[in-house]
Amino acid sequence: MKYKKLKEINEYVSKSISPMAMPEQKFEMYSVPIYDTGHPEYLFGSEIASNKLQVQKNDVLLCKINPRINRVWVVADESEYPCIASSEWIVIRNSEYNPEFLAWYFRSSKFQQLMVSEVTGIGGSLTRAQPKAIAEYPVPIVERTEQDKIVNVLNKINSVITARKTELQKLDDLVKSRFVEMFGDMKNNPKSWPIKSFSEMSEIITDGEHATPKRATQGIYLLSARNVMNHHLQLDQVDYIDELEYGRIAKRIIPSEGDILISCSGTVGRCCVIPANFKCQMVRSVALIRFNKKINPIFAEYMITSEDLQRQIGASKTASSQANLFQGKIAKLQGFIPDEGTQLEFVDFVKQVDKSKVAVQKSLDEMQVLFDALMQKYFG
Image (cartoon, rainbow, N blue to C red; front, side):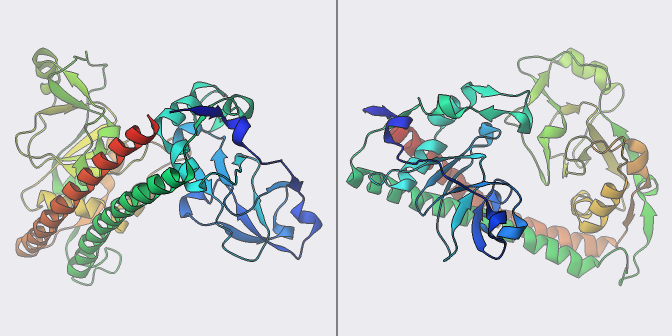
């Protein structure tokens, strides 16, 4: 495949505008904070304090801020209002390219590696890609008809991936709705369930190992907060310990099937149940809750992720410890104790939904593998 430098194909000539000079004019605004919504926002000039870039339909926007996030946007021109964009975007315009082809290329791992290779700043949202460096990066030269074919294929597969993710979200929402329907909210407690603190409902509340464990290249899972997601464990980036280190840590606690793990740093309050035949230990950023026999672990998992408990967890934060959830705070959390039959009815419902989720997730994984393979084929 042949390439040209990005600066050789970019026809965009930067032109700024001061929206404040036109306070009554409404603008179609492409900003970085609004990116995740997938749509621009509409603001009057009086609401936009700084100068912006003038853009037009089919311009491709490449974000300079924290380029590892890989934000790429094609201007859609969704309204009759003038289109403007934040200066944190690099604008690429070329009438001979399919803009979506360029956008998919800019989202490729090959281009992203280039984007993060020459940044300034000290990390996180303070890093920025450098426009002069980006102008030197290669862009593939592909016939327009071939570009259109590639875009068509990638768009179709991406739409299936999006649909599968939407299905999974709807199934999750279904379980949440069922939980509220069966148990109500804790504030009003329409079913008059007994309400107790976690310290009263639990046999054990503890966090993971405080000392720095000796890692191994393989062996037994050593879980941190990044591994604890809602209703599942994320094990693509996980540490290990050997049997000797496991034995040392196990003198404090041996995590067992049915125990609840909860993230205590970073994004606090995520939780999941330890599955069967899963041997692990935790570091300090993960807490373990072993509820008494009156509490079904799956019910407990969804109770902790409910709005009621998440509000309590949020309220437990302080100005000096916003990213931490300590044992003492967990012990003071309050939950309700429905009768065993109602808990089991809910658990059976969750298991049926999980069967559907497994099928959807399998399809999603297959589509993602296909998509990644095609991105590699098209863009290297």
